[in-house]
Length: 74
Image (tube, one colour):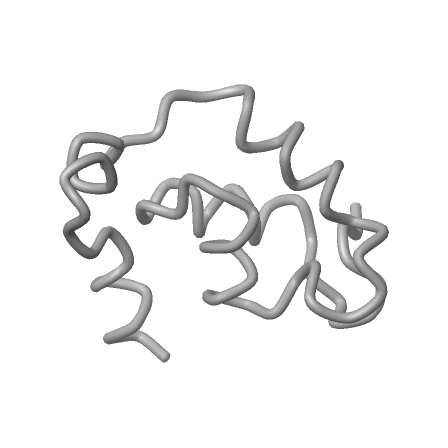
């Protein structure tokens, strides 16, 4: 199912980015642009992210980069 119609981002893609370390809608946006156009998908992204634990929350809390795997893949 599409989460972001503007950029064609699916729920599965958001979950993959979350599994790679994205913990916030802003980090998802950085990884795939979802939520950066009309913004109507941001609440849905928040709901998806809220369902699981952030695997790299400790890094984020320390101010360290959590998206290095995503940035390397881009």
